[in-house]
Length: 125
Image 1: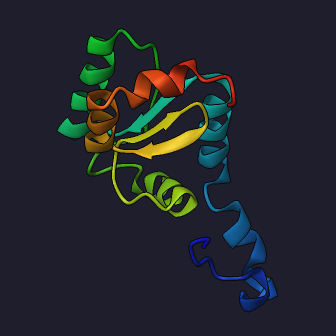
Image 2 (image 1 turned 90 degrees about the vertical axis):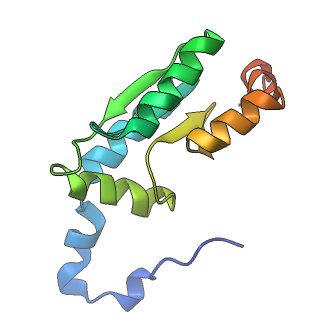
């Protein structure tokens, strides 16, 4: 079942462009990175969890693209647009071969059960 998103017909026409274009450049930037890289992490400065997740990938010898959007005091609107796009509520957001796998604890679980290496060697994405 897809997650609920307010249908465009339930948004007044005078604000369609505002809704559609709300930090779409940020979403597009992440979409491009996800299309161009097997592993992408989206994070923010001052947050220790993205740093922890980057260390996990480094320890596994996995190359990844890292995009950072502000810190606790800046660029929250860009991060909010990414949260609305993905439905994922926290940072980091980690994508493996185009699939959002979640955050640091989800990454650790995939590493622990060897699923991450399997995902990276699959040819279906």
